[in-house]
Amino acid sequence: MRWVPPLWSRWRRAVASLEARFGSAARGGAMDEVLRRTVAPGETRDKPAPAASLEQQTREFVRFYRGLSVEQRPLLLAKLTAEYGVEHGRVGELCGRLLEAQDRGLATLLQAEERLRESLSPRYAPLIGRICRLDDGVKFVVELRADVLRWLHSGLAEQPLPEAREMNGILKTLLSSWFSIGFLKLEHVTWQSSCELLQKISEYEAVHPVRSWTDIKRRVGPYRRCYVFTHSAMPGEPLVVLHVALTDNISKSIQAIVGRDHSPEMTEDIDKITTAIFYSISSTQPGLQGVELGNYLIKQVVKKLQGEFPHIEQFSSLSPIPGFTKWLVGIINDQMKEETTSRIFTPAEYTEIQAIVGAPVFEKLKSLLITNEWVKSEKLVRVLELPLIRLCAWYLYGEKRRGAALNPVANFHFQNGAVIWRLNWMADTSPRGISSSCGIMVNYRYFLENTNYNSVRYFGTGHIEASEQVLSLVAQFKKNSDL
Image (cartoon, rainbow, N blue to C red):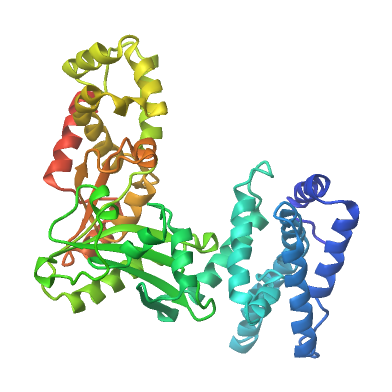
C-alpha cells in the first residue's frame, strides 16, 4: 500500500482552490500534461534519455511556464511541488534499508546512504538542473524563485505549505552557489557605459529615484562612483548597484549629494577626497533575495577605492530608515491607550507639542505624521527634533526580532560590521523620506580594522556597535520610558 503524507489532502485542497481561482479545468489539464512530459520523462539509471530529447522537453517547460500569467503560475508551482516532490514513502523505506546495511560492510552502507541521499531530492530537481544549462536558464531560475517567493507571501494559502518552503530553499541554495563571489564581476559604470546598462540602473534605483538622464549623468560623473555586480550567465544585467559619493566629510544630507551639480568636464581634486559615502545600494533581482551580494559588493568597492585613492580615510553610509514612521505611529497608538500622559516625550516636550497641535495631543500628532503635514510647521519641526531622534536611536539600536535589528537596512550594515555612528535630522526632505522616516537618515560607519570583529559579534550575540551620540540617545529613551 502506498504511503500517503499527512499533509497530502490539505495540499490537494490548496491545488484545487488555486485551480478554481486562476485556471480553467482545461488549463489545469494542460499543466498536468506538460509536467508529465517534461519533469519525469521516463529516463532510468540504466537507459538515460537522449540529451537532445531532454533539452527539447526542458525548453517546452520553460516556454509553457513563461506563457502563463502571473496569476496562473502559482497553480503550476503547486502541482509541480505536490506531485513531483520528495517521495516520502521511498525515503522511509530506504531509511530502514540503511539501518539493515550497517552490519553488512562499508561498501553496502555507502551504497545505501547514496540511495537515501538521492531519494531526499525532489523529483523536479533534475529539471531545474537541466534548465540552468540552457542559454537563458540561470535567469529563468532567478525569475522562478521570485515567483515562488511571491506565491509564499501572497496569502493564497492559509499558511505556507512545507513543499513550497522546500522549493524556495532548494532554489536559494542553488542560486547561492551560482552567484558566489568567484562568479561575480565588479564593473565601474560611467557615462561611457552602454545606454542599456545606464537605463537599467536608472530603473532599478530603489532608494533615491532617478529623475532624468541629467540626474543619472551626475551620479556617474565627477566625485561620484557607481559600481555593479554582473554574472556571465546574465550578461548586461546588474544584480546589485552601489552608488558612492566622494567627499571631504561624512555627509549629513542626501540633498547635498543627489542635488549637487558637478559639471561632466570638472576634474576631481584628489586632495579633497578623504571620504567615501555609500548613499544607495539596490538589489535588482527579487529572486536573489537572501543571496549575499551587497556585503561582497561593498568590500570589493572599498578595495577598489583604496587603490584609486590611497589617502582616503573614512568609509560611511548615508542610509534611509524605512519603516521608522510606521513604527512610530504604532508607538503613538499604544500611548493613546495608556493612562499616563506620555512615555515617549518628556513633560516639557509634551507641553510644547500640545501648545502647537492642541488636544488630544497624540491623536493630532498621529494625523500630522500620517499626512506629512507636520513638516509645514517650522516650530513643530524644531520641537520634534530631539524626541524623534531619540526614538529613532532606540528603533535602530534596541528594537530587535529574533536577536537581529528590526530595521532591514540596519541589519544589513550590522552584518557587514558597521557602527551606527550618527543620526541626521531633516537629512531627506523628499516626500518619500518624510513618509518613511520623518526625514531622518543615519550614517553607518565602516572602521575597516574592526568590521570583521563587529560582524562576528553581531551574528553571535546580536551586539551592536554604536557611537557615543547614539548610546546617549538610547540612554535618554530608556530613562524616559522606564525600560
